[in-house]
Every structure is written in C-alpha cells, then in structure tokens.
Amino acid sequence: MTSKLTTIKQSELDRAKYAYDCVNKVKDKEFKGNYKSYVKKIPTLIQVNGLAGTFAFVFSKKGEGSKQKEAYRTIYQQVDKWLKKNYKNNDETELIEWIITRDPKLYKAITIEVLALFSWLRRFAEGMIEGEEANEQE
Image 1 (cartoon, rainbow, N blue to C red):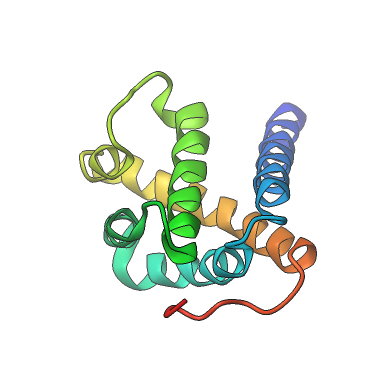
Image 2 (tube, one colour):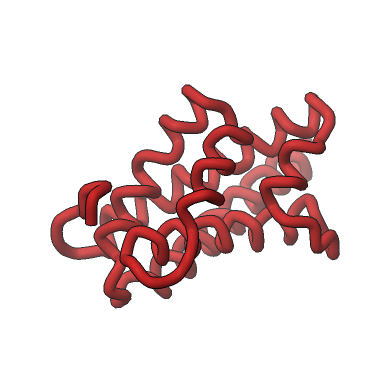
C-alpha cells in the first residue's frame, strides 16, 4: 500500500514540477495574459465539451502571430509534451488525432490526467503571471 501512495504522490509532484516549468517559461512572454486566461478556462471547456472537442478548438486557434494564437499554440504543445511523456511515448501522431483515436477507457484516463495538469497550470499561472488576464479578442 505504501508504494502505491508513494507512486501517486510522485505523479502529482511530477505534474506540479512540469506545470511550474511550463508557466515559468511563459511568465515573461508577450502573450502571458492570454495564456493565464486560457489555462483557467480550458478545464471548464473540457468538462462541457469533452477533451476531444476542447482540443479540436485549441488546435483550430493555435498558430503564430497574435498573442491569442501564441498562447493556444503553447498550451497545445505543453499538453502534447506531457502526454508524450506519460502516454504517447514516441508516437509522433498529431495530438488531436491521437486523442480522438483512443479507446473509451484510455480517453477517460487521459481526460483526468489533462484536468489534473491544468489544475497545476492554473495555480502557477495565477501566482506567477502578473497583471490582468487577456480577453478573447486580443
């Protein structure tokens, strides 16, 4: 029983460290307000629209150029990297394609994992990113 608790605690600590590193890399970027806003909104989007629907939305919004696109691109890449480390291994499939082709049990586990990651991202974004959140139009 002790080893299972230790494994769970270690997973949570790994998730926290990864989220801290992600936010730390963004905190001085121009799109930090957008990022902060989106990491707070995405968990609700996942609960309402599902993981696939939410990441299809994020996929459609990501890009380069505007602060909004940069923030979504960064979030998409961060989640992809985390899932590659924990589920995808060396699978080079596009994240959204990979999500929508999972069996229902794995899809549910991945959804729970992504929500847990966003819980940490949100906490660190609120604590580390100064200033106002950006609205969707910026």
